[in-house]
Length: 141
Length: 141
Image 1 (cartoon, rainbow over the protein chains, first blue to last red):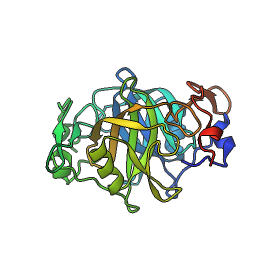
Image 2: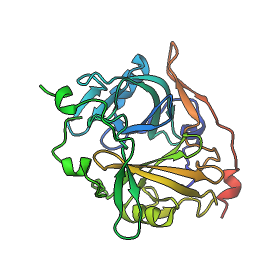
Image 3: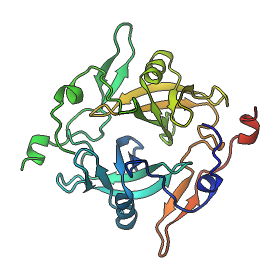
Image 4: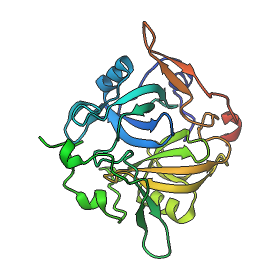
């Protein structure tokens, strides 16, 4: 990365999130206890404000084009312990206490497969892939 | 998140990364020892392939529009211990052994400030913000 001219954004103590052309910022969510990455999602300005104010994780769903409180359907909420922002303020990292599982597939984390380089074609293998809930039951209308 | 129709991408063991309209995927990089989030960056197909093949982290810089081996200028390389992919394969998580510091500002992590909700305006405070190198010296031409 080149040294940015925007020293104030990098060195200052003012929150000046840099939303992209769609008005979104990337959010990495980790488990406060284990450090495991639970999910990567997006926030718009309102989601970030609500997360800061409520200590509950709010995101913006690109597929549904809607603000979304994590767990509002599934009950798998996230209590926010800490919020950090990166150098150029285009990403946030939230450390959370996860109720149940973060992934809509029922796994604790969305990252339940690892890449196996191997000899031939690259493959995936399951890791920490146990389901903690049945998505068909949880998301049933 | 709604249950995706793309069950194969979510449940299969084939690596099928979902690059965005710009040909990029989000990458979260954590320290393999401490679990700390070091940085959030992007990879294009070539960066992902090189990362898998070489066990060194490669990214794609949006600002420079160029493939980039982490540490090629600064010497602060990342040896990749594990690569995971998320449920819908639009994000990867790499666990690395970081040589020196990940952030171009000289800090170990790019996330050296936390959000302080407080009573009035939201402010940031420094956390783990010690510089491990002097960017002016490292990036000098």
